[in-house]
Picture 1 (tube, rainbow, N blue to C red):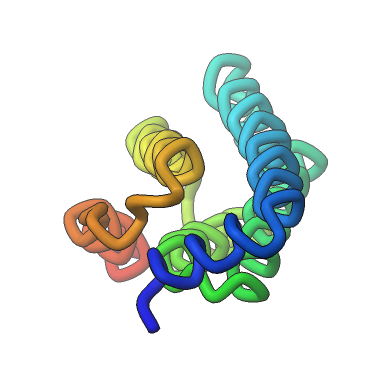
Picture 2: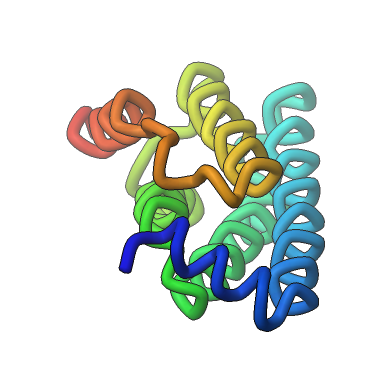
Length: 138
């Protein structure tokens, strides 16, 4: 069964679960976006609290998406979570370009949530490659 069929099944049998997931995930994305924008605009790339907020937000989405078997969302959030984890541990340098790529990922995740019934049709390959390249460049 593909992701769209699972979502259709959830929407039909438990629409409140999907609505709750979308609402909570959007809230997490807003928190992550706000934290990352503050890091970038205020040049506070060493702010552990903001980095932790962004990491935890993406981690929460990954976990919930996994429960719902939304594999595309899980894969994207997993690579973003890995990068944020390396940022917060000081293993990867936080730069404007890398923050822009993570923010682009947040936008893509938001689009996935807004169009969850068509998630199978969304191509995140290019973004995932860009994100993976960030890890390889360290």
